[in-house]
Structure formats: C-alpha cells, structure tokens
Length: 223
Length: 106
Image (cartoon, rainbow over all chains, first blue to last red):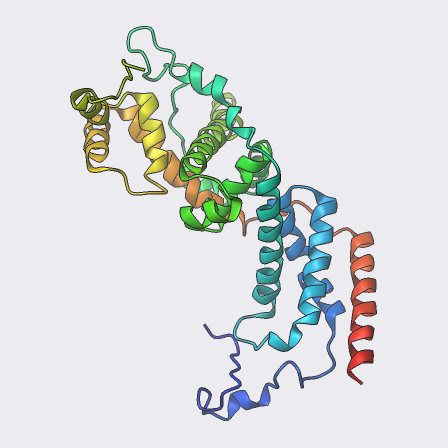
C-alpha cells in the first residue's frame, strides 16, 4: 500500500508531498503508447490465459487500451496504472463471456466422464478408488511451485481443459470470484458450475500427477 | 413415476449423506471449496476421511491445486510476449484514437 495515491478531494489528502502528483487529466501529455511497452506483455498474458486464442487476446488488449484512452479522465491514481488497465481488460473479457454464455450450450459437461468412471472401478468396493488410478503421493509439492518446468506442465495441463470448463476454473480459482457471481455472469446454474469445477479439478489433478509428479518420481529413481 | 429413488425415503437419503463412497467424496471435496456443505454431508465426509487415506490425499491435493492455480497467474513462464506485429498495430490505433480525442477537444 505504498503506491502513490491521489485523491481529488483535498480533505482526503492533507499532506503536501502528494500534491505534486497531478491528476491524470491535467498531467503531462498522455502517452498511451507507453502502456503498450510497459504493460503489453502482462495484459496479453492475462487475456491469453483466459481467452486461449492469441488473435482474440491481441484484440482484447487493443480494445482495453482504447477504452482506457477514452476514459483516462476517470483514472484517479487510486490504483497502479497496471491494475487499472487490467481491470478494464477484465471487464471486457467478462462482457465477452456474458454474451458467449447466452449463445452456446454447455457441451463441456461430457468431458472426462470416462476417466472419472475408471478411477472408481473397484471389484470389491464399487465406487471406491481403483488402486491403479487412485491419487498417488506427491513428493515435494511445495518445491514444484518454485520451478519453471512445473509451470510449463501446469499451463499445458490447464490448456487441455475444454474452453468453458477452463473459463469457470480460472474465474473461480485464479480470480477468486464467488460462485454466485460466476453463475450470474455466465448465465449458468450453481449445479452446472459445481459439476464443471469438480471435473476441472479431477482432470487437472490427474494431468499434473501423470506429467509432473509421476514423471519426476521415475526420473529420480533412474538417476 | 412411483419408485423415484429419493421420494419420501428419508433413511436412504440420510445413509447416502452419512456414508459417502470415494466417488461421492471427490464430488464433495470439490464442492466444499465453493459452497458450504449441508451438515449431514459434512459429518459423512469427516467420518469417511478418518478411514480413507486416499480421499484425505485427494482433498489435500485439491487445496494445493487451488494455491498453485493462484500462483500460476503470476508465475513464469508466460505463454509468450505480445507479438511485435500486434504491438505496432495497437500503438498505431492508439495514436489514431489519441489524435482524434485531442483534435475534438481543442
């Protein structure tokens, strides 16, 4: 919370130091091209991880920056420039999801049914873990988060989720959006949401286990 | 229509809630991350977890997965920088838009 704050109301900012920061509207020449240099990669990453289509992601970054340019007077320095721009981009993406949510049906729900079915094929105890597909122990799960290779595996696994499933997963787990807000935004029922989240977690967990934890375990045994 | 599995059978519903199998436990472990579970389901889940190491492991891994997903947003590697062609295209359109804004303001 040490970023420079700027309130138009002088009663809120009584000290002199912060008065040197001019409001954006009267400040030095507006330089939106600098936004592209300073925040372009970040915004593109943000859009790409949610839209998963590079061309669409580029378009959204452009739209967001144009929107920012038009509403620049409203940026009052309450947040950093990057979080301001990210907020605009995020709203544009949510709008896109809102429209898409009404246009297409949720076919993703069928995904992963087969794998899930096999994980609980158990002769002695129906619907209990099948020994071969049960969760295995993850060694050094904490250390994985510090490794660049792990994140490559993570991104490739989450990239395999069906589009709408990935969408709700990111809104819920990455953006920490409450369930009811996600339902309202995408026009889906809570049940629908929970089933998709459940399937996304099952699939992502399994994918990481196979491609990171199991792979590393066997590599260590060999060496 | 007459033999609906849940119709009026309070006992079988209570049994389902209190004695979940592992498949149901994966569903509940996920749901618990998004919404409060009904009391009976929570009790059944706690009882099952006492005896089932695999479901305990599964649940812990889901919690870990949530943490990893949040960190993934900030973690390297990024899927790729904004392509140079897009950079120049966006700058170009911003320049044009900025010119029209200042033009109409003056």
